[in-house]
Image (tube, rainbow, N blue to C red; front, top):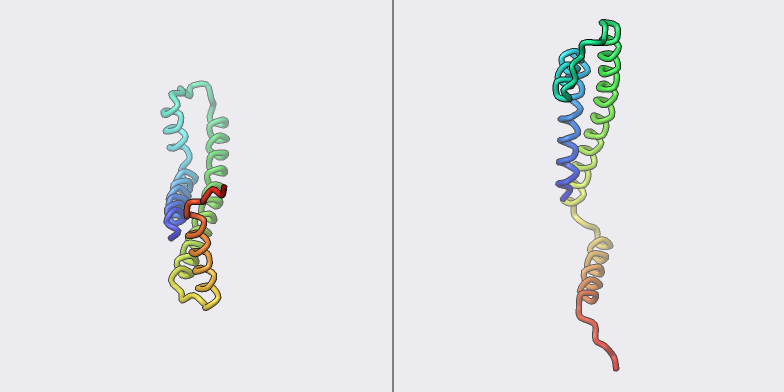
Length: 115
């Protein structure tokens, strides 16, 4: 089952909406980020701060779109894989699976050393 893909999709969607939240109000998140890094922002004027906030907003909105498309794509493929696992197999697919099981059984047997 595609559990890893489902978890990655959920995480990508969560992070994408968090990036959208940052893009909506970059001034608060800019201050939070600078506090996290321990940077005291006393030298920048208002124009520089606005420029930094616009850049942060643009990058976060771009990340939102990228992660949203990744999460939705992962969710689609997860649903597709689950549907594929649950459907009835054709006669050819059943024969192929049984052949693969027999091959694996033969490969897993210990090999004799011929003398």
